Image (tube, rainbow, N blue to C red; front, side, top):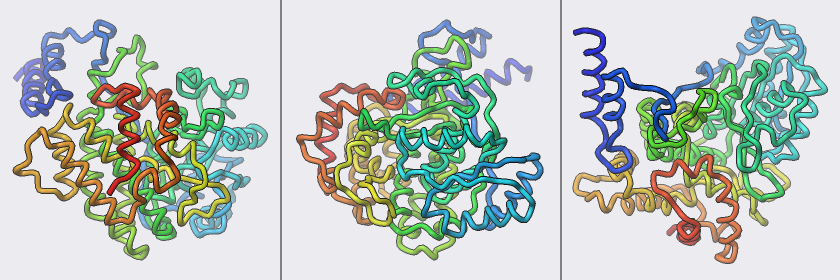
Length: 471
């Protein structure tokens, strides 16, 4: 079979295997038609025709953190910035890193003022530290808050003349391309949730808007993610639960996101192709696998901190989901979560040693998930049913029209078993807060536009109202 015929044959196979639901039913047919005739050209279409996979190098293994001193030595590091938070600075994960750096003669300075659920103010404080230190390598030891803060510090120290909003996602910021080469960054995740060790995304609370936003660019992704499952054994039960909910929603949202070939506009230059591109065949593999691990291990990981198999598996699930959503993106659960976390009043989550009110990111995301997936299901019911099946529901006799209800009920049952708060009302919100929550969601178009179903302000209002109580 000649080369061109072989490609055409492969694309026919992909087309025949494609999902038949409305949002995905043309998954590969348009690609086959254009590839087989050699007609794929940039900017001929309004929507994109390609997707790109980017991910950090990942090293996994129990005790692998002990190698970090050798890695820095191999890099020729002379002045390392180690970022963490005040709680972690007293725990074994940071101790292991410091021992390895000392053993191998690596010079370093510690920044331990990272804020759990960082803000623009806390980002700027870390950036100032980085600019003054003139570091040649960065190391982040912690959860997503620490890793994201370190990414931002590295970015702005590498662009010393940039204003803070230059790289923040539009429409809140200017969303400028990153042009300078950043310094190497090694991420050592201590939670099993954000997947930040795999992605080019850094999220923070923009205090003036009372909503989260962030910076998304492939240049931000760590050089290396050192995934050491021993570090997750120190997570309190509720931290493990909320981190796991982030994994769950990363997988569900990326799997059900608008397909990459329906995302607009088609970039005129590949530098403008966003990190979050829409669902695609490669991200689907990681999302499915992450969901299977969540279904099998999350409850065990929450209920028994000493269950090494469960905690280790969830650490890998975080990586898998991170690879998936880091390229496909997320949609409504995450877009709506940002004002939920940003408008927090008095709620203080169990298991978090912080002095300020906090709605943990994973909790803010998962509380809207039943309502969101009931809303999006009619655009890709087969994917919603597949997700429900992976999470343990028998869908053999379920009609496509019931896909949203079934996945929503599956999620409610899953969350009830893990003793999740009963909706937004249980963390301090009332119906009177809904307009401000909607207002905070509207600027999150970087993610909300990847919803497979178009939505209005009235739809968002209804989704927040439906999320006030879960059970």
